[in-house]
Image (cartoon, rainbow, N blue to C red):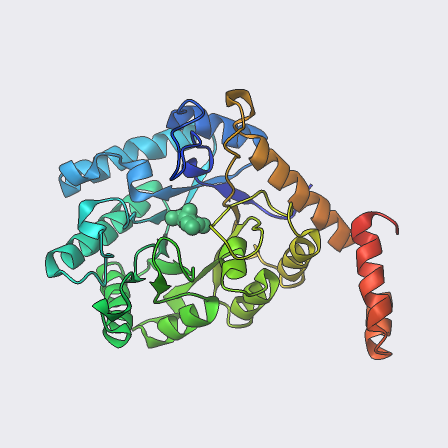
Length: 344
Ligand code: XUL
Ligand code: MN
């Protein structure tokens, strides 16, 4: 039995297309995904605005809310909650040069429209969290926009969202690059600075994704710890990543089991989840995965997380603290490795 509640997005079960080739599996409809998510142990679903309301660009504000109410009924049918809604500010032609900091005013207005509608959808789905994965907020051409102006644009956009709804919480998911070249908000440290500059810092926090931290050359457990120290870890996207290359969204723990152990350890030690936070798994299946194995990577990630949770429960803090006191870090390291390897 895990002490945590888990969440997942519909995009985590996908047809396998990448930038270099077409789909390798069939598409699966939303209801089938919900049923399977509930069956394998998830309590909540994460949404992009258009995961919930696919044709939202061609709908009125009222029609969007009405459609979202239908999705809420579907969630209820499977006993699932909605964790967050994230405006998808990277697919539409309006977002070719970013959203909140696009070089064109009409595009910035479009981004705000999507942000407000995301809040409306979140409200209909029964959640109070908006995630901003700022895919294209930065520069492709370094001289194309001032980083000072762009940073202020982001603060202003978040302030408008906070004003639009007096209790909504905004959660930035930082990433240093991809698809953008130079991101404006690349790490949890950047998130803290943006949060502090808004009109209501208590309502602005972060979503730490393991792979994104690794892409920034940072340790995911330390990034999690940094956010926890300021009470700013609103959610997490756990996964894994082989070094600094394209964003891989591998199953949790499959590349670096010790780093995964330390992510679980810092979450457990700081009672993450006690305020209702979910453990989100932002993992993707391999391109070679067959249709019938479409959910294996999710099951594997859950199993690995829970196995590491058990390891943390067995961690001998008395022994570890004694070793720390005596500064016997070689022994501390080997104790940890032996525990992970199942040798103690
Ligand atoms: C992109 C990423 C996204 C966000 C949701 O790298 O992690 O899946 O988590 O928009
Ligand atoms: Mn993510």
